Every structure is written in C-alpha cells, then in structure tokens.
Amino acid sequence: MSIRVLKYILINALLLLAFSTNAQDKTIKDIMSLNGYVKNLTTVFVPPGNDTTIFVDNLLHNRLDYTWYISDKFTFNTSMRNRLFYGETVKAAPELYDRLGDDLGYLDLSILWFNNKGMALQSTFDRLNIDFQSNDWQVIVGRHRINWGVNLVWNPNDIFNSYSYFDFDYEERIGTDAILTRRYINETSSAEIIYAPSDTFAQSTFAGMYKFLANNYDIQIITGYLHEQFVIGGGWSGDIKGAGFRGELTLFVPGKDIPGETQLVGAIDVDYTFKSGLYVHASYLFNSLGLDSKTGDYSIFFLRSDISAQTLSPAMHNVFAEIGGSVSPILRITFASWLNPSDGSLFLGPAVDWSVAENFQVLFNVQGFVGKEMTLFGNYGSFYYLRFRYSF
Picture 1: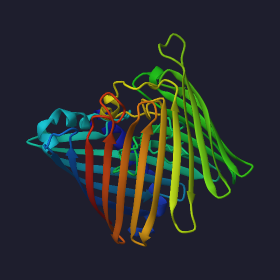
Picture 2: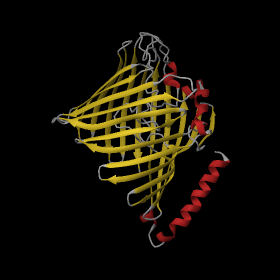
Picture 3: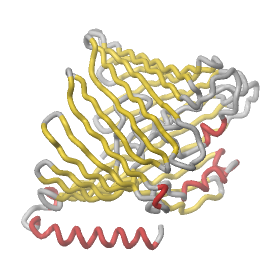
Picture 4: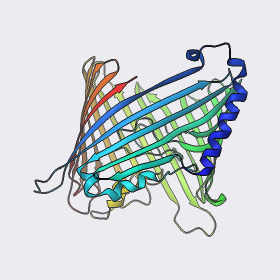
C-alpha cells in the first residue's frame, strides 16, 4: 500500500468523524453493519491428453463487508478480501501469484503478504467509498462497483468493471476507483457521469449514461472517453411473451494519432423459465476484432487478469447456452456451454449448488475444455471445483 492510499484513508476517516455528530444518540447496530463469509475452494486440474498427472490446489477466502450509516445522507462502505492460496500450482509456478500484489485500480489497495513454500497470502480492498444521497442526487467517491451491464453473461456496456465468465468464485465483482454523480430524473429515468482517474490524464476515463423506459423496455445510452478511445453504445432489457430479452452494443474508436482499429462488441441475451421451473438461457457475443479462423493463439485470454469490455472473448463469434432447474428447494443443477463456431471448440460447465442451511452452501462445479490444439478451448484440460461457504 502506498503513501497516497494511506492519505486517502486518513482523509476519509476525518470526514466520517465530521459527518457522524448527528448519529451519537443511535446504537452501534443502528449505524453500522458487518457481514461476510468464509469459503474454501478446492481445485483439481486434469491436464489435457493422456498425462495422468493432476494438480490439487486450495483457496481459503474470507470477505468482510462493513457499512457505516453516518447520517441520513452519508454512508461509508468498505469490503476486504483475504485470500490464502496453497497447493501444487502455487508451489510449481509461484510467479503466477506474484501479480496478486499488483492492484489494477488507481489506488493501491492490495498487498501480497508472502508467496513462498507453496503458499501465497493476499489482502485487498475491493470497496472503499463514501456514498452521498439527497433527494434526486447521488454521489459516490472511492472504489465501488459500477455496473452498466444488462446481459447475464457478456456485458459490452460494462466498460468499468468487466469480468471473466470463468471467475465464478467472485460474485461481488471488481470495483473501480471513480467519482460517480447520478441524478434520478423520475421513477423510470436517470442520468449519471463518471470520472475514473489514471496515472496519466490521457489514460483516465470520462463516461456518461442515460437510462429511460420506452415501450416497456429499459433503454440505456452510454458515451465517453476510455483509455484514449471514444466510446458510444447502448443496451436494452425487456421481455417477449414472458422471455427475457436483453442486448448491448458498444463501439470503440481510437483517438487521433492513437494506433488501433475501430472495434464493435455486441451481445444478445435471452432466457425463459417454464412453469415446471426449468430454466433455459442463450446468448451470442460478437467481437469485430476477434479471430474467425480454425486455429489461433488464444493462450493469453486465460492468463490475463485485466479483462475488459473489449476482451470478453478473443473469438469473433461466441454462442452460450445454459439449462437448469431446482431438484428440490435446497438443490439446484445447471449445465452451461460456450461454443466457438469458427473452430468447433467447446466449454462445458455442469454445476450442483446445495443449500445445506441458511448460511451454509456447497457447490460442485466443473469447467471442461474440449477442442484441438490452437483453438479457443483446446488443449486446456479440465478443472473440478468443490466449494464450501459459510456466511455471517
């Protein structure tokens, strides 16, 4: 953690003390809340081919969510993740875990305590902000989740907080260091502008979104300047005869004298729940700069940690399908798949989610990759996950 971050936290603490004078007559439970969970995720990796070697790893994960209701207008939010990685992969390739100490945000809120002898411990704040709300206005300053996506799998409109579909264990998603100003115009429309600073002004992000209701569809229009690119796009969310129908389109245009090509990323999303409880879901993603060939080098896609709205998939065409349902009130089974029609490679993902108790869940999940070498999902083997989660 840098000196800049410590100053930021100190300033926030002083502001909190100043704003909290009217809350002195309330109890701690009235003005503060603390919750979180402890999870243990065991991963078994089976390499592709006939290799009988397997790798077993574990992730012990603790999350703390703290909220301070300073007054009727000001709220302080912070969330911390503590993750202990241990196992054979950490021991065999510790360099893969060195980057855990590199915070992707403007503020350095991550620290890698150690990475040796097959163990790595990291702590990070993925939320740290002050939220001001008064009448029709809202202002959030600090690290928070900015969710502009409407689809369930791929979100081209989510230019601030994109995430990998394969990272199922991070439900809260990453936060962004930014200043958000939002105005609620009426019950069905709002407008917001966001400034996310970077190390240089040219790399900073300025963007805005306008949301409104038209013909029973929620419509959003976005525009802005993102990492030396001009961005314009939009999305919708509604239904057709009971089936959810959503979509997002975003156009990225490099600024003057900036190398690169104009890129269009779009996705359509449809889902439906039958009276029996059976759930079906399908989605299509298009990336104008993606590969549309039978072979290619896709390895960087699975190694990078900075997924963006432009890198949701390195393939031009992507088809997703999912089916699921509840076997009982406490047991749900789903099966997901992701196909690259250009090279025929396929991702298969069955999962079983068991709610043992109100605050205790067990998840068994498989991520299988099928395809020839030099295809999107080829030559990656299979991953088997078993997760226990206790919430408090």
